[in-house]
Length: 103
Image 1: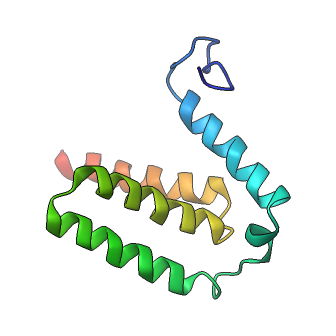
Image 2 (image 1 turned 90 degrees about the vertical axis):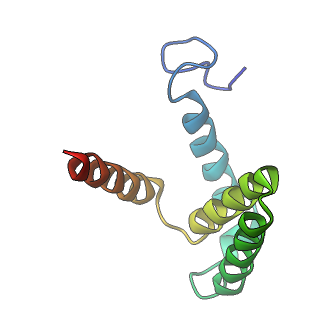
């Protein structure tokens, strides 16, 4: 069951997992000394490493590993102190363009 109980109080309701993720990310930014010390520049080697590992998982066709590596890539973006609303705005704009392109 999600910590939030879902947007409408039901476990598994749309958006519940995302709200849980935001709560965890907020906690890491305030409670984890390593996360607090990171800058965009300090995260470059980690972003590159995770990108290469993602590519390797794709080349091997390892879906389970790919899922983990994509999660690690996403975490590095969040570690880079991009506010969640900036990440959400970017994703929303990307998906809106994709929908517009299909019309």
